[in-house]
Length: 148
Ligand code: THU
Image 1 (cartoon, rainbow, N blue to C red):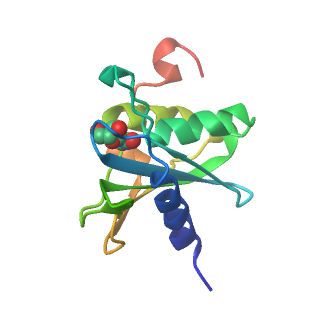
Image 2: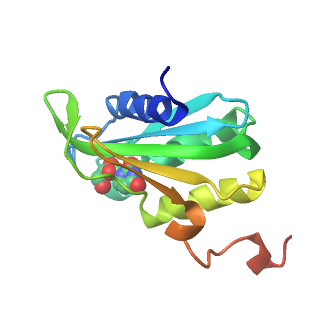
Image 3: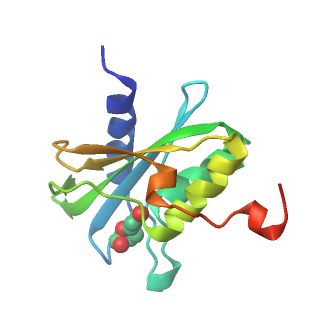
């Protein structure tokens, strides 16, 4: 039987193939695991005005929010690599950018979870497992604004 992390990485890989990344040629997919087992995915969405690009992780989390499921996120898988012949390629795991770590932190605060981040290489040869608190120590959050 296929395990849950493998399934989550596969969903992220599938989403990466839908990346709109004509400028970087780098496709990224992210897949969220919710507390009831549901998976919600997203991919990067670039813009001719480069700075407007949306990362895969942020798209996935915003999709969960739009479905009223922001508080249910427990884990996220991220995968990415150069898009060549309609496939993502590369041997190195992709780790969320700094902005995405902050966005994941917001979701984790709402679900009361130190979200597990599975970082996968495009070819599937490597998957790292991190707690968000290890990727984003001393995070800025609601408490810094005087909110619980
Ligand atoms: N990208 C993501 O989607 N997530 C990340 O965490 C890092 C970067 C995207 C943005 C851009 O479309 C491409 O990867 C190259 O930076």
